[in-house]
Image (tube, rainbow, N blue to C red; front, top):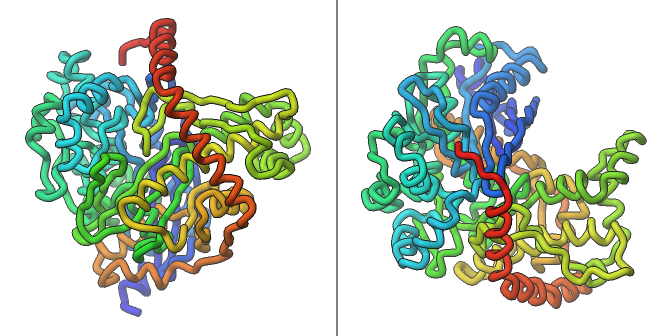
Length: 522
């Protein structure tokens, strides 16, 4: 052990998510010694809007770091660095002092849906996707900027920088606008081969490179924390902050899913399926993303909009009475609803749920998609509706996994992470749905663990990311239940057919919603 390792035994990882920021204190052996999570709301003032208050998220980062330092009484000089993970695709217009001119517009915002459709029809979208690796969808900052270009031109001219939520945090802490290659590769504005802003994408977005942040590697370090912020977080002012990467690519690192054939599946608020490649690779059908971690570590996969947020909707809107009864008994409502769903056989007695409550990304890339119960009959009970909703999320995961298999061959193993990985019921359902063994690492906080590993690399404490093998232990394996697999295989084609037959009607109902719901300007 080096002197530095002896005196600075901890890495802090801040994982900025869509609904919460999780802060982890991790030791040199990869053990999570303390964690803290702070939630914040997602505002949806109209059907096509999904926004957040950037100051609330910044405060969650500061408070979260302070909380994990305080829980174990960690001294400031014991922290080697703070390393970051962040959700992708957010955008905030700010002035020169990093004061927001807009809310934080998240990946779930669909106001630019018509622009995505125009790019797809023109063929220009496929060309941009091939260079940038970001599918053409309203989640993409490219599309969001196109919307601002036409709908808020005065805002564009007043804006000093268009930045994401992690860039906002760094601007507040260090007075510097930087974006790592990983998050940049999720903007639709970044050329994967040149590792630079794509000039044609910039022209299309109506912004200059001066209105975007400075591009830096994921291992880039920021130093010079103000005494005020250092005190608020319980850190030393000279503590290095490692810029880090996106939560998706870090999740693969954090579960050790970077060997051939190993697939990472993360389900939090949303979800994603990802595999690692050594150089940029895009999908001829445009269904999958390609995002960077390091020069030789790229992740190909697809995200879904509707993961744990579907379970939350079921809890709050469908099974409210059951959830409240569980709370009165001191039981976690999610555990109770999962137990309720387990009383129903695989396939929910012929009830399907398309969980497209906030549109969908991979593999459909359709912002107008909407949720549907299909096959509902008088024999179905609320417990069927709960199970069908959970199965619906897995049908969405299966659809992305099938696209990855088409491009890269079959998977040998799935590594599960995110909030859903706590549920043995959901993990087994995934194995049975996809037909592949599902394993669970000892820590399901994959993005935070991945950020900590990247922090060690940035500080020169490890030679490469293969050190992840020393950190990650795989726990229980869920083997495929063949009878349930056969049921899900039969229903998969029905699920897909229902979506495709309703596609035009999704467009129609979305137009109706937009006509009859007020859409205030940002």
